[in-house]
Length: 474
Image (tube, rainbow, N blue to C red; front, side, top):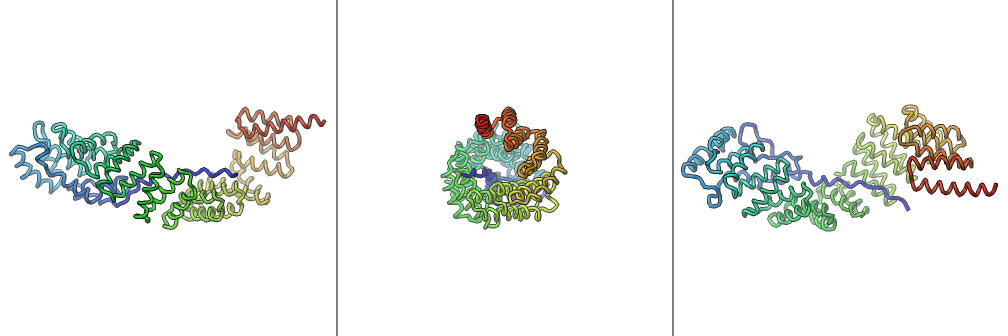
């Protein structure tokens, strides 16, 4: 039974990919038409830059006099006649006016409006200070609590954001975005059960919100509820089959469940959309190889190399190594040629040496010892301390009746850090091949002291048995 290839899980970071483009950054010095939009690469982009959410944030300059801090008649006149016109102009003018009014004893509305101007212009530090001042004057100031939570969220202070967002909900301000952002905070804090609950509530307000659904999926995955996550993904993929991040995420969940055949189907869908990355194609190749579908595996590997020439070289070489280890020498050779032709001058250093060693491994597997030794000796000339190449060369000499050369290569490899135990085992095998059992046993016992291994212990015990039988016969 073959040992399956260990597959790295696809990064669930796909959840942080933006689903909508950000609005352009406003000109400096003027109050922007959008409310502190974030860049498209920001994980918050699709939720924060949502036009409806932006409209509501811009509308938060208004007042709800029945439930919020009151203004005196004089304050109302100042706000109406000076502050409101200033808010339509340059940010600096509005800030200067508001700073003059946001004094101890004045209404919290001025502190809140000042915080909003700072926030809208991405001055989050001053925005937080102003919102906290407003809440200090009027703790149940719902909009100040909400915007303070949003400001903490934007600065990545998720733990601090939770309290004001939760307070907003308790004050009677529940809406989809507050629940959604609360779920986002909980998710980033690793509190997946709380995130799941928040996203479920958010979807009651906005049942078609893709970000909330993806947040729910991520939370379910974090809780190990893979069946729930897959059910949600099936629903979302029916609505958005063109979304590459969803197929990648579904493949990841199938890998987590050990359903490698289904993971391959998800990655194949991603491939057919033309959105599969080289890393995903390499993983698809691994999945096919686990299913003994060598031709399909080679196709995925080749496409990965073509799609990312000169990139992911260690992973591409690993794929060739796996093929060679499965005795798929033709497929390994084809992939190595593809790597060489596409990588060009990018194939240098350790990657180039690895390519030569794998080519030698393939040559040895197909019986072309001369070619294999040319490559191995070339590697050893470039790096005399390449223990892997030394041991491979020793194996060749051992199989071809040149024990002295083999022993020299093994002994040289044994002087290199980390290879002493392997070298001792190889020397012992060489001794066993010439029926020198006692020296072989001594070498194996020494190897076990350096690096104990079950398979070496079993081999040692077999050699002991052979040695005893040989002793009786003599």
